[in-house]
Length: 262
Image: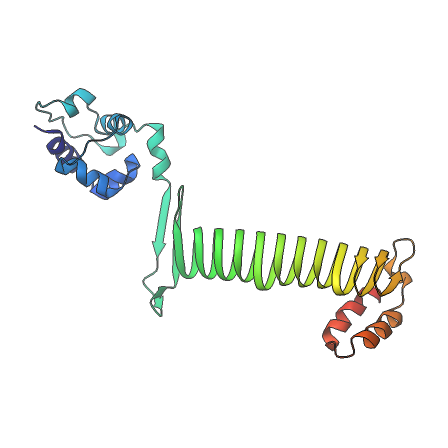
């Protein structure tokens, strides 16, 4: 009996599909198909895994001799440690869809698994609400996030981003870059932080901007605090300076800045 025939027989005896066998061994289904059709042979490490999985010797697999071991319960199979890496995978896709996109798609495991759905959870997640290592979409949570609202180690958000490194219209993080930036080091049009650099208004321990308010200040108009106390600067002083330099600035922005000094 040829190797390809033995493969089919052993797999079917244990009620495995080609996909399931491929997942356990750590190869593609196409690879298993080629083994069973005689187009190719497994590499030695895969041959050893097959030997342990089917509880037969490597010789009995490769030699042209009868091989018909008694069926065994799956619970008695001892799989090599290398195979268990490929067992960690879970996927769920809801039947309900919205414009052809699953309402919920969960696809996680050790490897590269992509989840696409209105709610997506995966190693790589793409959706309205995305949770994963790398996420893209509306509301994103992950190590690396890109979306309208992003919360991550590295967060890039069109509207709001929060993370170690945050880039967005409103950015909050250790390093924040945005129109409104708040962080240890903040760079933007309006910046607040330990080190704040802004084109318009900068507020921080070190502040550099057209209007600079802080302990160490550099700019066209500066207000230096006393004894690291921002309350030493009156809100009226700041309001007068803002109205003088930026008379068309939205009242909501002005009010937010003034709240720091009230």
